[in-house]
Amino acid sequence: MTDTDNTDNMDHTGTELVHLERDDGIARLTLDDPDKRNALSVEVANGIIAAVDHLEGTDTRCLVVEGAGEAFSAGGDVEAMIERVAEEQSLDDSVRHVIRNTGRCVQRVYESEFPTVAKVDGAAFGAGANLAIACDLQVFHEDAEIGFGFRRVGLAVDSGTSFLLPRLVGTNVAKELVYTGELLDAERAVEVGIGNHVYDADAFETEAEALIEEIASGPSVALRTSKRLLDAADASLRQAIAREAGAQAAVFESDDHAEGVSAFMERRDPEFEGE
Image (cartoon, rainbow, N blue to C red):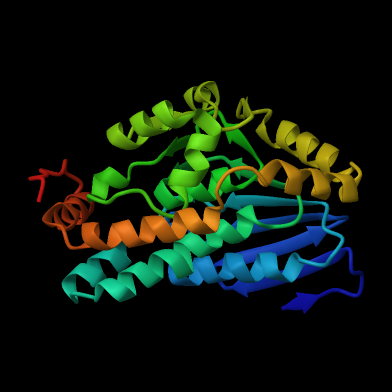
């Protein structure tokens, strides 16, 4: 961790793949593993958690989450899935990964004490989509896409989908998005309730930054308190992640999951057998 002399300006790297900078109360957390489309590997997940932990207790007024390169986050680490299938990793280890890594980093962002904004200028899939909707607000570049296509790799939802998505779009729409794995463009995402704004390519940076600065210029104590009150309703995200991980244990062993991972890597449509 590296701090400058001015406490309002920080430069922190939780890992080599996650960067955190803070200037005048605005913190920017950047996922920086573009070769893997910012997938939520153990290293990236731990970097996110470390970065948010570092900000707690500071005078941070807004946290911006974004991805380097062409993707916001492609979600789960498919290479790790392949290794797990090939090495016949135990169910306990697989479930621990869901809770401790992807689930925990999504939860950490959701439970942060300050307002958060996901700045989505590329693809956000699966657990990566959950990271985006774990933020309080989402702003989309016109070319961004978001989807909860866990079915594509033969898995049930995890990393907080069952808690976060219905809160935004309602149960019926959430089920359709999960059942079909529909990939939503930015306009469609905002139309169904995922996100706040879509900005044209030429205006994305200017408009997104104007919104972020407006939030950061507000009464931070009041906004943090309002956030706690607005998030207090319904069941907890922690309970949802634990429930999902337990259910996912059975799905990890299915032939359909193995087929989904193979098809994903071979860039073909999966042929699920329902087993």
